[in-house]
Length: 502
Image 1 (cartoon, rainbow, N blue to C red):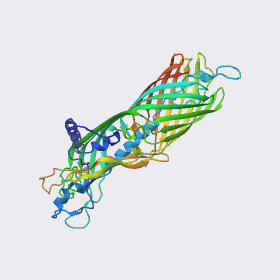
Image 2 (spheres, rainbow, N blue to C red):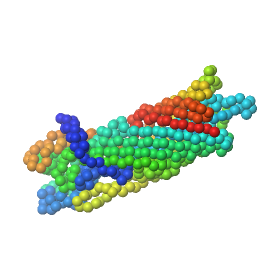
Image 3 (cartoon, one colour):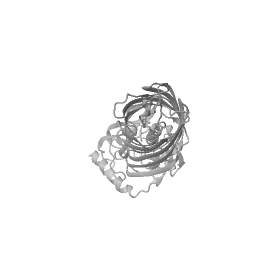
């Protein structure tokens, strides 16, 4: 029965949302909170009376108190969900696998024998950092495109999230007898989101010495975010503080109004295009033989992108790494097998995407809402590793397969959510004009609540192909496939790129 009620509310939302005009949020970071803001009143869903404004149910001051929107404040569930998504998007931006900047044609000969070394036979990996450097005085320029459509969050469709407010907070409303204020009751809200990022990055690498090179990469990023909130339900029974239910005035979807069910709440969107964070990479070869090369390096990401619009992460990040490449003896017919491995640990500073949004007090008629103030917090650290193999099919093409792993939040955790189910909550009946003796139906409700800062792993497979078009001009195509559902997920990400060595 109760599932049918949810389906009917969802259908009503889809019909009604066609007539609701989306608001344009001031930044991508605020889209979720703006979608939860009533277009007509500016009220944030799940609002309850502040403790400071006490009143007794049915007293002479009761009506004036509960109809004054300034006496209401919003719970933190949407804020917490917004914080978790912002941190997830920032982390995704900071760990997006970049096409290796020194991954083109490397010409190397054995100084003792003059024979060509095996590393000259493969065109290199795509995402795994190559242990070799490109050689003194050599240049490599490259360009790649990646499009991310994030569709799931912790395994649940981003277009069908449910947020749960647990209730249980003390309000400012006292029962006619007794001194213990009424506590707020549970509420739930539907949330649908669409998050897309497109990244075009240009890389330049220069060989300072035969064993040391430096790379600079600058991405152009486009972000698009849309959100809608719907199916607001306050589980207060008949809302008349009788037969075990609680007064609608403790929780209501609109300040001072008897509203316990609201199929359509609001929707918002934002798009932005601009330069992302500048990446500087330094790498040196510390060991080289005919069959193995070891390199050490570090990535420095500078916050040149607009973090509030998801064009950058909003803070400096540093990632030292080690890369190892192995080469087999030629297998015949131009086949060379090259296993490779790298590992690094990324550390970030404080960013607005790691902090939280706080609604501001507006006026007595509007309650709490935008503009939302922001503070800063640490983004999670990320331990990254990758392993795979290149198979050179002659001198003109190479197949590449990799497994990429990111262990997120081992030191600084990442905000996350978990699902909670509450049993025996009073489902709302008609409000206003309903007899006080109406007994509410009881049922269960589930939704996302804050899980605090956690750590988890994300694992992907990368499968690509490189081909030498003419001279040292190389084209590559690749697809990244996610293997897990942890955090924010784009399950299939294509990459296309070109590079030229000289």
